[in-house]
Image (cartoon, rainbow, N blue to C red; front, side, top):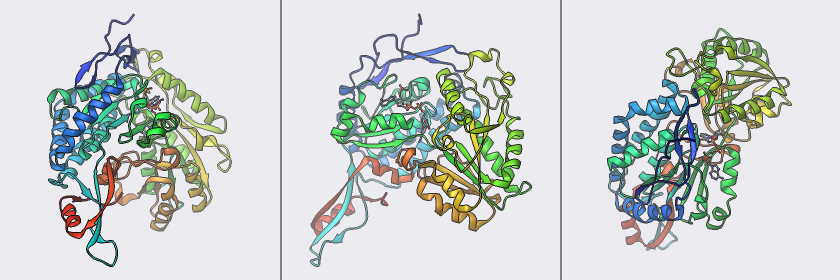
Length: 526
Ligand code: NAP
């Protein structure tokens, strides 16, 4: 029996213990228990109502500049406590320093981005989409599209792989828009989100009621959503479908944004030969995507699409590069890739890989006995695994099965149309990259795959240094993708505020309409 008491939830403006023993949060390297969480006994109805009434009212009374200043204060609190977050990320997520930085520093810089961008909206509380215009021939009647913060609560449900970034990229936009937040991190890695939120709450830099956190099962949370709420969900496509199909969600029709899984692609241009600088760039990009956070990134490269004659050189170069990645306990200074987050994820990853294996050949699989850890069998380790589709034209699993770990598959193409067709078979992705020194090929591919991707990254030698990486979500650009990727648009600079704002066409005497327009900040359409 565990002697650890579950972490309290922060709802209704106070720390409240859930009931029962709760679920265990475990170190995926050593298998030791770190904390427990439970939402049993938490009154979600009251928690959401409190956030709407107390937090929503307080945030709506503030201007964008004031909310932006609060975000800046949040970022400063997190920065001041940065060191302990790295330890938690190592212990609860098996993160190396590089993995932890991606999540934690990514979270802080995203908050700072929205603080800075939000300050540019100044001392306004409303925004307008475009300028006033006459409704007909008579200029006395005009209209303007104004938008106000929705009066509900932002229900944020996050995935296990980004406990820091996932929490704060959503919260930053919601708070800036004037909508309070109830955040629910994924259970397995909730400790980091809980600690960060606790630090911010204790620092009292946000208005009362504007930020709540629940750690543990989702239980009846969605039974209490109202029409003016927004649900921002990140997780698997299967859970996203359950959120959308929830009876209360259908009945009350809150706004829903889903960021789901995605079989992201990288395409190598036909001009790139093995000695070209772009080939080394291509290999580096894939190895980083496969191994950073042990491949547990929604944006990670899963499908590697190359000209048929480049299958061999790509397989050789990737195998050689993957063989140099030390896997093991992230406490070990030489280790570049840690475990996946839980034994359950390790098992699910094994099942997904088995499905891929059924129609692909293994090109490279890291040797399991190379794991650098005192007790490797206690850890949720999964070695890098590279496949090559046996037949690229008929392969199905590679376009359907998300192996959420250090796993990718090589596919061959014959021409640009064929490459774009393979990208599209992912049924909607978060991001695809194209690596080529041929500008015409890159431009053509960008236009061919843009409709099935939330983001397209074009790479050549000229942007090698500037490139943040295929998997890096920059707050100024759209994050989200069509179809299987969830159909959402979570980020994208200030345009991400629209999800939390309600737009209304205000029609009336030109004098009033113009006064209203002058008392709002201009924000570009989504
Ligand atoms: P998951 O199993 O779908 O869980 C996601 C979240 O949903 C968790 O907080 C989970 O809570 C909660 N949840 C579980 N059942 C629910 C229900 N019936 N209604 C509402 N919420 C429910 O996903 P995961 O395993 O944590 O994350 C991995 C997946 O997320 C991968 O497929 C990855 O591609 C995707 N992902 C996508 C993005 C993106 O931006 N597109 C980013 C990161 C991850 P519990 O943890 O308590 O079960």
